[in-house]
Amino acid sequence: MPSGTRLQRIADRIRQELSEMLIQEVSDPRLHMIYITDARVDRELAFADIYVSAIEGATRSAEILEGLESASGFLRRLLAARIELRTMPRLRFHWDPTPENADHIERLLASLRKND
Image (cartoon, rainbow, N blue to C red; front, side, top):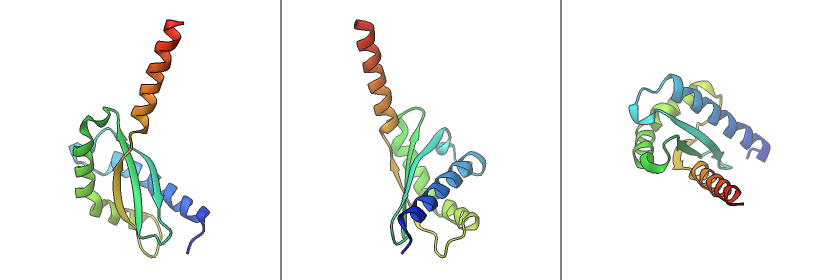
């Protein structure tokens, strides 16, 4: 089994390559204006959990996740060509609410500063 450091390097590389592919090679209109926030690979390299978010927020989350699921085979094949691994992990996509939560906290802090 790979070490924790190696798993992190693989996850970072998958995140980087997926980000580039979403900009350059994917033409699905559902997948415009989204970004990869995190990637995690399990110890057996069977699955890669990919966390995504969009500029618009969670309003399009279902549509985006549906588009990513339909493109997962295509994305996995492109990743396998770019990253040298014995087996490419299956991609599982999840919505990441962290950017929206951070924006909400920033607005709350701004309103507190304004009231002081």
